[in-house]
Length: 288
Length: 177
Image (cartoon, rainbow over all chains, first blue to last red; front, top):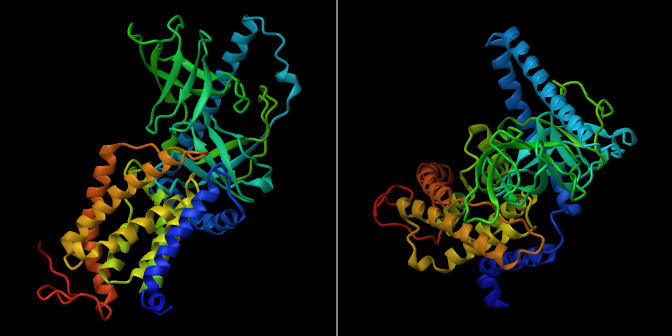
């Protein structure tokens, strides 16, 4: 007892190491889902992140809108958003056209689904510096669940890996742990878009006979059950068809510019969003 | 001083990712937690250092898509390890403290990777670039030097029992090897 009291700080610190080890052991194999205590912590801490991001955006918006050609800036933003939406729409039309050309008339998702999209704001970025993830301000109260797909007007952003009542964590496409089954939009060649932790991804397992060129668009294949079919993943940057390799070595630039990601859409069900049928619950301020 | 340090560090952990993103340096791992930990160890405040390491580790665990306890274990284990070998380390010289911060970061990454390789069940494997890790350690070490100065200014004299340098500044630290 005397020894304990004499070396109390040391014993307490050792106890903390053991406690950390126990926590780590208990959380192994449980996935990345938040437990109740973590959800509570996120509910408390995320508003601080949200407040910080909001303040930065507010200051930036004031600077952009009032000190830097307010009207021209607004017009530019509106036109850019419009181009993004038109690009998405165009990509969807291309996909539908190609699907029709190949006589895939049995695709029933177009008239059978009525997907609900909810907009969410990015409130924080990964704090560890090790992963590519974001925290968004929509959670289980808004019916967000694990593995739901998160998109932007440009394409796939990622999938939900943790949910609290008001916030969710999204694993981004470029994260090293992300792998999405994709197809080349034009040739229908298959492969796997895998994050590399950097700004570009690799398109793996592309067979030698697959027709693929730089500039080709990669879309989700719908296989795997998480990502719906036809969502834009990225554009082919380079193709290395070395005779010494089993597969083609393809680099892909993600469709989404993650550096400028501010608002995202969560697909509340796992079915494809048919053209013109996606119901978007846009709220003011998040639908620029 | 210590509660203030905890609050500032907690806010740093919360906003670290967002700030890195805003500054365009998300590929760097600028971590200020080891600086505070080394500062506390330098002041011979082992209990506070341990508690601080555990709390900041848990907060990082919650905010990152990793297993709960991973960063807490990393921070506390390295802190305990450094304290265990303190007789071989010079905690009275600001430059060597800066070096210790860099070493702390390198050990942190090695420890994290080792733990994740040993216990990968369900855990995400972090993306890592050795160049960015070394660069991060270097930049954080350089950042540590002025921060130690300000921490010493704000913290006042060392608590009784802490080793005091014979020659050096009025806070008991020397500024040379």
